[in-house]
Each structure stands twice: as C-alpha cells, then as structure tokens.
Amino acid sequence: MNALVNFPVFTTGLSGLLYKALQGVRQAQPAASLREWATLLNTSEGDLQASRIGQENVWPLRDAFSVLYQLSTLQEVEVTAYNDLGSIHYRGCFSTPDLCLDHPRQLGIQFLTSGLHLKLQLEHWYWGCATEQRLDFFTRNGRRFMSLSPTTATCKTAWQELLHQHADTQASHQPLFEPAATRHREHPMPQDLTSLELEWRNMSDPQQISALLQRHQTTYFATLCSISPKLARSVSLDSFEHLLNSACRLQLPLCISMISEGCVQTCKKALLKPCIGKGSLLLEWQEGQARLDPSLFEFAFITRKPRGDSWISSLEIFGASGEMLLQVQGYNAEGRVENLALREVFSSLL
Image (cartoon, rainbow, N blue to C red; front, side, top):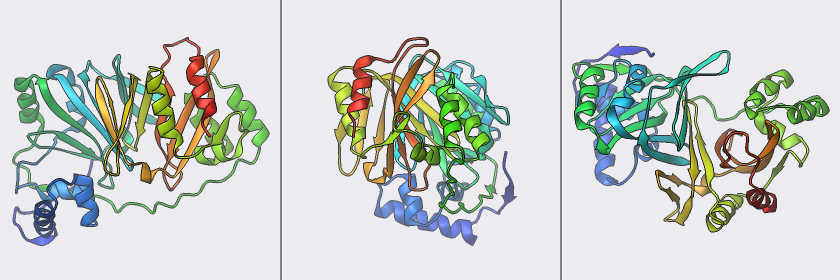
C-alpha cells in the first residue's frame, strides 16, 4: 500500500520539529481543521498525522482495505469525504462492499445504500491511520480524502475491536509521502468536435465518458468548453446556490457528489437546506451535511448526458486546474425520466 521508513520515537529530527510546530498551531488556532493546520505549516495533512505517531494516540493502519469489509459490524458509522472545496458527511449503516470496475485498469470498490453511493478508487489509496475518534485515509501526496468516525449509534465493542485488529499501536514507522505535483494541467482541445458530439449523444450511460475522452485525447474540462451549448454550457458560480434554493423551495430531492482522487461520495435523495455561514456554505439533510467554501469555486457548467432512454442534467463545479470537484443532479430511480420541474430549474440557470 505504501512505503515506510523507521524512525526512533524522539521529538527530534524533522518529524519531531513538525510535531512541535503542530502543537504550536493547535494552541494558537484550536478550532481550525487538519487541512487548515497543514496549510499554515506548508505541509500535508498526512505528514501532520504521521508526526503524532509515538507522541499521541495516533497509529498506522496495518491494512486499510480490510477495514472497509468490517463496516457492517459497526452498525451506524459516519463517512466524510474531503476535497479542495470542503467536506461532505453521511451517517448510515453499510453492508459488504461490491467490486467496482468502471474502468478496466482501475480497481475499485463501492458501497450502495438507499441514501449513498460511495465509490473508492483504490489506485489512489496510500496510507491510513487511526485515532480513538476516527480513521483517516490519504493519497500518495498526503492529502486526506476520507475519514470514518463512530456515532452515538455505533457498536462501541465492534469499534474497539476494529481498532485493536487494524491499528498498529507498536509502530514507529513514518509514511514517505511524495511532494504534491504542480496544479497546472494541460487541457488539449478535441480535434474532431463533430465526431465527439455524436459519440456523446449516442452514449447509453455517463460512465462511458471516460472512454470517449481517451479516444479523443482530451479532458472533460476541455470537452465542456468546446461542445454545443445544448450539451454543456458555462454558468455563473452563483448558480449553485440558486439551484439549491429552488430545489429546496420545490421540495425536489437532489444527488450531491464530492469528488477527489481517492473516492467519489454521492449522497442521494437529499432535500438540501442551504445556510450561509462565516465564509462557508452549510448544507443539511436527514442523513448528513456538507460544508463548502464557495469562494474556491472557479468554473461551473450545466451538462446534459444520455442515460438509458432519457437524459440527465447536472451542475458541475470545477477547481482552478480544471478538475471537477462537485456535481449536483436530480434524484431519479433507475429507468425514470428526469423530473420536468427540476429540468426547468437547470435550464433557467445562467
């Protein structure tokens, strides 16, 4: 899963210095998040958690993948996904995961419940650690993309057994994270736009987009910037809040997806209730909540994609390097056509 190196458990060396810096920043800003502390110290979240090994109750996970197959024993658990825009939380019960083979070269697993579709992209999983309060999972660059936490309804005995089985309390090794790659990304425009649009219209499922982009040697962002406005059009960043407010007023359930390298977490059938806080947007629904920073939205598109015998509309939010980070769709059971009232809401966004 990752490369490890052994360090003696001293408060000297780079890890010890980082831990001392973490102690200082936590004292100065106790309400800040792990991500905010990492930003202040110009390091990664993974490095911060690793610096606590041997100093606090933080332990490496022996095998992060096996943990996922034991979620059903916990009864209820909270799963949190993270990316540049914020976090999304879901509380629920899980069964054994299924294999997910959307792409022949990318092995994944997925959890499906009535309110959640959690897709885990295992090629990006690198390191995991446990505390008494949660399990954290990181990419090769030390970016935290997911956490698992007990709730008041969690079986406490099962949670302690999971920690006992998977947390290496005797370990003194540190993960070797790689420096984050430059955020600049090339987006070559499609050369045969007519052919690409025809293939887009002839898709039977949005999951076929990945193969379409490979055939045309382009990216999703470049494609949305190029194709017909009937298939994709740029809209204002305010469209996100307009969509949420309209759907809430009309009592139309939505599916909201937070997208990162390690996982895609889609909360389904959510009646989202937006609330503006101090520099953040809080969304709440029966099984969870999301905390987002709208100031970090860079691009927004309304897209139309075929799905079966119908079409589905989406509002998709992108970051500065052209990566999709957030997607909002209407909730439709399999085989059902898109809700006409919600389609009108999407069409009205400018």
